[in-house]
Image 1 (cartoon, each protein chain N blue to C red):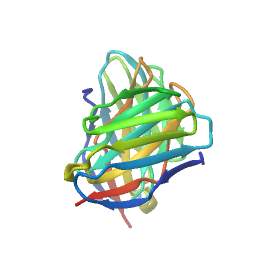
Image 2 (cartoon, chains in turn blue, purple):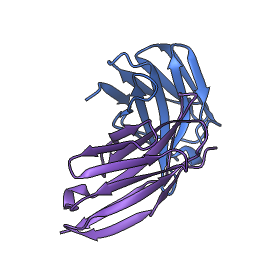
Image 3 (spheres, rainbow over the protein chains, first blue to last red):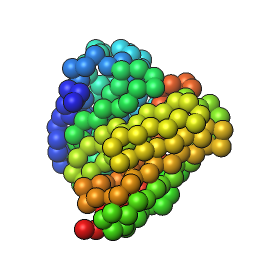
Image 4 (cartoon, rainbow over the protein chains, first blue to last red):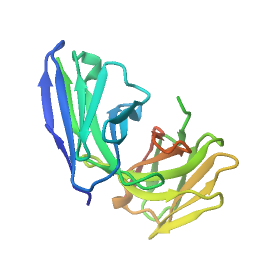
Length: 112
Length: 112
């Protein structure tokens, strides 16, 4: 299994507070992704990275920002959390185009 | 937003039945089609990545076919077992190579 660690695994926060989720990988994979999972929507892409300091928006990027200052770490930040951002967040990585994704264990985020 | 559709949304079968699901995706700008298996309380795991029109992949009792010209892929499970119960996801990778867009998934439940 690819070494992908998400932290925290669970978080409860209040509306309006900033939240940062971390994805750490030990595989030296070039590509990293943040998805959210919601009932009826499957996995939706929030942001992705194709290299250090190279990031781009996915289909549901509003309210989220990301940073990738080194290969191993991809941070997802909710600047001011809202209840609509309550979800399970999955990080995924892969080596290159056409390669399979490896997923982290997920972060359950609840915004009250 | 790319349209990646999976059908049916859910499926109940008896142990020993063979079954199949469909993934439809854009027929333009194709690079690869992915299939993932997602068990409850776990993370998605890759089954296949297919890149060529007419590709067929097989892993044990599970196989997949690909038609890029008409934009569909089939996943087949022969002789379903209770341990096959999971959600099966497909993901479309376009030729920009950075993004993977997931379908909503097919939830399979196999009754003993």
